[in-house]
Image (cartoon, rainbow, N blue to C red; front, side, top):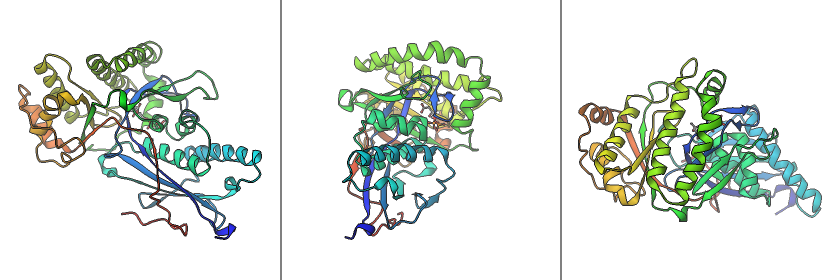
Length: 397
Ligand code: DP6
């Protein structure tokens, strides 16, 4: 192939992560520097993943472009995407400066194509997986030697939570203290193999109206919540230590208690913001009720709920408690889609005990699908490209 028309390509998949210690608040909005550290579980890519191909060629006309789920995105006016591209290009430039034989990929136009394997309608934050995949795919295209930790600094600038999707298993995002953000990065706390029995059941709940975006909501909280200060300075630092210890010791009860407490603390500072921010609804509260009922019936904590910036519930449990934890939801919601998923078939319906009628009805009316998944690995390089050999985007399915 002639030099000028050569198409360089690299593809990756990246996972979704769901935090158990929440990131909510920025101390620097341009660099996405957080007010506190956070910790998440990376979820299996069988159920939820972003797939991205990064390509570049002299034959591509500028500007850089991104097609997401078949739609052209305006990346020129997205400061966050531009920050990621600028950082990655400058790392490539340094490589090219050191080794004159390398093709000057940093000078070429990028054509990026990305697709998620889950419906956007599921209302799951896809930006974390999306930015992690974008950064990983371009880093591979440019053959950058940087570690996942170093790349997490770049992905963080795309979307804060994206930095945690560059690794699998149990991942901490260290808030850092430096003004330039060079110490605000993700770190693996434990790999998937440490606690592979960890499962997650997502209850997809449709929101009546679109909630406040994370970025805007966080700013309102930082500026107005009186409770938030204690969360940032004392509560979260203490919980980070406790939950990391619980993960290392595979102490599910402590893990579950802190997970639920931290979700509630995050929603409490949202409610304490002005104007107040509400993400959970009656369906979310009915899910909390069902989790509490299952735990009461078991006489110990066998499952834990957590909620992000929307009404969906994510319920963590261990494989050994599949029947007592996830089975309750299968018996309440036997016919909704999703039970055929990765860990769904082994869930046997289980009677829901003393769950009140009102919560039962609310769950039945409000949950549209489930996603049966578990803890999973980090980004994976794959040979399935979304840009063909001629440099043309493969049509979206
Ligand atoms: C509630 O990472 O989406 O899910 O940095 O503004 O892009 P930006 O915010 P984003 O916020 C995620 C908030 C959260 C908690 C969490 O994932 O830790």
